[in-house]
Length: 398
Ligand SMILES: *Cc1c(COP(=O)(O)O)cnc(C)c1O
Image 1 (cartoon, rainbow, N blue to C red):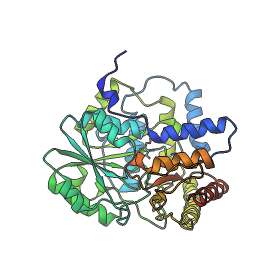
Image 2 (tube, helix red, strand yellow; image 1 turned 30 degrees about the vertical axis):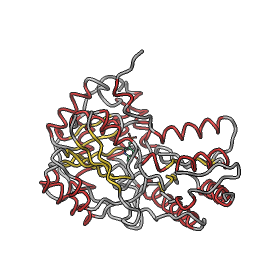
Image 3 (cartoon, helix red, strand yellow; image 1 turned 45 degrees about the horizontal axis):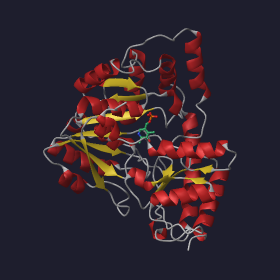
Image 4 (spheres, rainbow, N blue to C red; image 1 turned 90 degrees about the vertical axis):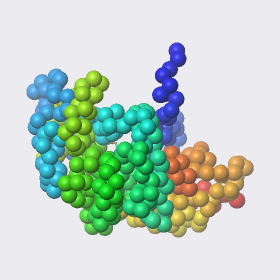
């Protein structure tokens, strides 16, 4: 069968690939420490599960409105008001089958051939491919580790051309954990408004911030930036609901209407009983979040301390999400005991996994070959064990 050309322009998600390889090794009985995970290790809170069970028991198992029920949209609107000081109407909201699906729908509704989509690197793996699937051109802008992996307003300004449609911002970031302060966002917003482009703001890690960091959404700096902002958020990371597949967008009503049309011809509504769980998550108690953030924070400090003690490895202390992004480039050029030369993040990841049973995601997947992404969404005990193995692996190089 001859496949469509668009398929050859994209690759399978590399983060899912490494997780599945590590899982396969585990299934064979191999004791792998998996730093690859892109999801919290906590269980979905009971009150949220109970809402879904109740919905099922009450027969809430049929088609629902394509962009989400009015009740769910209202819960999302309340969330934006409460957390971000943003006012939206139902016509500005669409709920989809996870935030990835939300971003995909944005791509299909907004991007087209000839459009340039500015994506700061290190980037979340799906942004370039979602642009490519919409026939647009990803324009990758490298950010510097010294600049905390953050895009500067000057850098953005210089990269904008008459073809620029959109810039993608993700704060806190997957993979670096970097988070933009309100002041930094405001300066970027000024460029976006002055050059009249749109911004896709992926706020999915909003709730996972440390050291008293105050999250702000770029859409909150006035009407001019708000009307150019597509806010993406979802329940996966904040509520540990990755499998439930609920994400949402707040944006200009014309874009939301177009996305709703597209969704009506593909997935239709988000799963009915997950919609009830999402309402409970958004409107319900949130005490558990404080505990989760405190636990992530402890792990974050431990993993960063331990990594920085390994000779040849350096790691910034991230302000958000549950990833660290250590620099391993000083080890490149060295040889493994079996004689392989480490020539970049992929060969390092392969060495760590095959010879030392530690799964990490090579930085090249995020457009930054000097680094590995390690997730600390696992027990402290496993973190200690895994970092111990990385220490051994590095010591064995010559
Ligand atoms: C996990 C993640 C998403 C997608 O989450 P869904 O599970 O699809 O809701 C989107 N953006 C970033 C940066 C992520 O890490």
